[in-house]
Structure formats: C-alpha cells, structure tokens
Image (tube, rainbow, N blue to C red; front, side):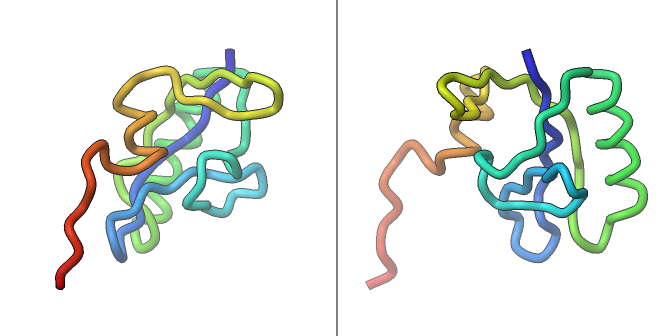
Length: 92
C-alpha cells in the first residue's frame, strides 16, 4: 500500500500530483510514492500552506502499484486521474 499527494493547479484547476522531487505533475504516473500516510498528510498540509500560488487543497490518496503502474484505489480518484466519464462536446 502506497500514498500519493494530490491537489489542483490554481491556474486552471487541473489535477496535480506531487513528484518525488517536490514539483507537481499532471499525470498520476509521475507521482512520487510514499509508504506512510502520516508523511503524505504532512506533505499535503505543507504544500497547501506554502504553495498556494501553484496548487490548492492538497490531500493524500491511497494507491496500488501493479506491474509498475500506479492505480488509484477509489473511484473518485480514478476519474480524476483519467478524465471525465462522459464524452465532452466540442465547441463547434
């Protein structure tokens, strides 16, 4: 069982995942894995307080790793990681 810190970018609201080097990625596959929920919570709290210009509402999520692929455990987080569950209409 692993943990990842997720948030949203303040500029456009897109999903953000914290990398191991402390930067933020838009893909779950780039997220830094943590083996402790306590550490993940601490990083999320610190990020929310110190990185308000870049991200908002950081929190830890529980994930699985299968064959080297990071998979969110909850349905909500799978949807956030993979995009909308319905087709988005084109503006034209």
